Each structure stands twice: as C-alpha cells, then as structure tokens.
Image (cartoon, rainbow, N blue to C red; front, top):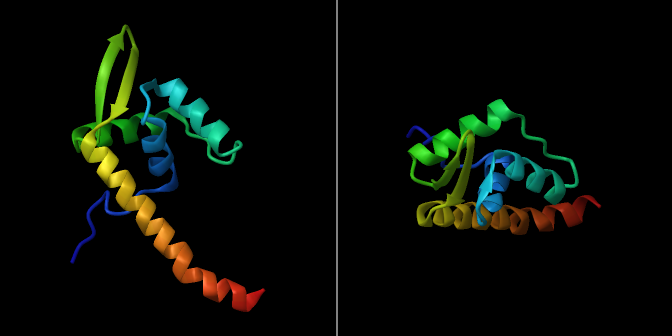
Length: 105
C-alpha cells in the first residue's frame, strides 16, 4: 500500500505545526523553531513556504491574516489532530526502543 505524503511528518513539519499553535508569520515560525531546538533545526524560506503551502492545501493550517507580503498562519483542528497523532507515534517509538537502548549502554 502506498504511503500518503503526510502520514509521517518530517522533523521540520512537526516543529512547524507546533509553532503554529499560536498565530505566526514565516519569520516568526523560523525564529520559534530555532529557539525551541536550540539552533539545531533551521528552516530556509523555500522549505518553509513549500511546507506551509502543502499544509494549507491539506487543510492542516489556515492563513488568518495578510498584511502586504506578510501572511500569518494558525494550525487548524485537522492539523492539531495530525500533530497529536505524530506526537503519539514518536512517543511510542521511544517507549519501544527504550528497553533496547538500556541493553546497549
């Protein structure tokens, strides 16, 4: 069975949805993620805006304000559900791997 494109979120996608739990524009999203990940995850504009476009077309985020070129986005109820699913998938992976990690310490 083919995998749907947003079945598993990339790290950048996951953090972007977290960022959009509050209304943010592109630069605010980028700065939020940099701060949250202590500089480990850096989004370049091309990646960010491609991702935002995909999220919007899939109904996961909404564009809530436009001021000139500045666009502000917010996660939608569907996006919140998808973020919760991904969080649970990642949590389950950690739990399942924990016993094995103890064995290799």
